Image (spheres, rainbow, N blue to C red):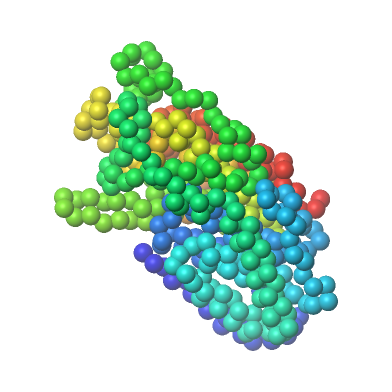
Length: 442
């Protein structure tokens, strides 16, 4: 369902009397405004059904643009130019002109978000509201115009760089070919959709040397005849779990489901329901952490950007693994060899099983967020409440990522070892992002 935000309009009313040049910065340079702008991007991505890997790309380039627009005027932060693959030194603002770099960051985020999402102009209203707000609270005209121009300069630089990541080329690459080989992926109910983004592993990474840098070990050999084989035992674990799921386990599965497009089928009637995708869920967690920590604008933006970069690389790495090994989903195997009527608890997404994508990207995000907010940052995740799913509490980001291992198993869409190996890969990716990126000057 398309949701409308009235946050910016409320801010205009709240700050309409603040015409002093000394007061406008306090109104504009708020991390709350950044969180609401990212939330708007999140809603656009949700409403337009972007698959999780594509969503991660949208978040990455939009937040990088915001970060670059901001850090150019803040000596405590370093540019990512020269740190991310293929990103050269970026343009510099005119030292003789006044800017509001926080405002420029918000506009740059929207400009790039507009370009990498659809329909065209999805964030135009956001730009208009932000601009109206800036004017309403007394931002001088020269500062406003210079900041808008600077945001456009940065956004154009990031978009030109983004066009070389092979995303556009991947749109015309051959479709996935389904085979009849035992143990390989085939479309699953209810939509029987074609494989999502089979060439995603060919995209340019941002920090990883390549999509294969942390390629997980091969999956267990397909074997449904030998009851002592590792593969058979994994299948049996799922079958046994399906008979004994308790309410807590079901809640965990639903909480981390994050299916951006679930197809509901009742006889001849079909309709879809939408939720945050996995990267959308973690971007929302970034906002929750910022609010709870009372983080300033720079820290909040660093958390979003570093996490979005890790999410993007984690999806590329995981999708490389998925289509390298091309393994069947539990639903396919169990229906064919064990029980034709067996169903998973949540809907199986349309791509190969090994490794678990959500477990991979969750572990990567947990590492980057821990580097920003601390290793023992306890928080309450309310992300799913707008979809009717109760909140959950966590003692750390890593604990949340660890719970995701169980969540995909309780959902009965992944083998347990696939989740464990995905988590291990995600940790390596997140740690590499933390180690390589020098963002805040110590």
